[in-house]
Length: 178
Image (cartoon, rainbow, N blue to C red; front, side, top):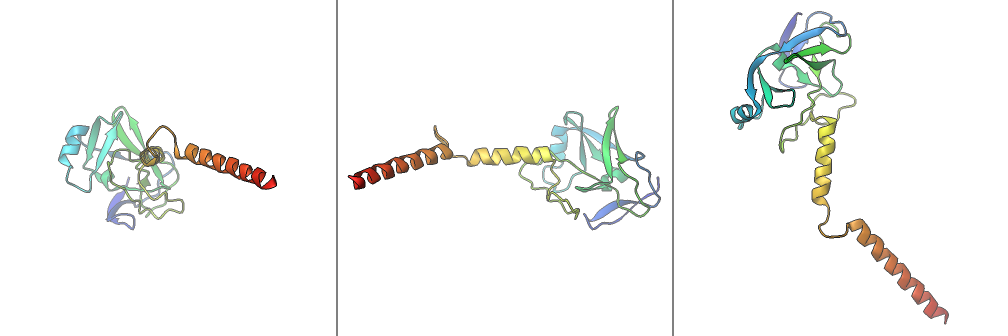
């Protein structure tokens, strides 16, 4: 596969193909040193950019040191990743024209407070490199943290308050009628 690294509108540098790639073809393997997740976190604790790729359950990561580390995220990618026997392959999910930037959806899941803003520019960009599942989980956690404390939820209190106002209004109407 003829791949080159050059400037990218998505992020600083990107990986491009110089030849046509057919759907289903393996484009490149994501290679590098293997570290435990804990080691990877320690090595890149103060770095804003990492090339760590989680394997299996995420307890082992590949510290990318190959052409694949330059493949950028896109919400509408032309490739996907496949883990086969402990190896990670970038595979084309559609035909890719010569000169096109190679991309895949990072589906990030472990970034702490980092927003992981997406710059892919895709028509259906979700605005983040986090996976849909991770975003749903983060949204639920924010909503739970923002929910009022106590025995009743805000919705119940509001409903009870409305009910009591309605009862008082009905009592006032009866008093006026008499």
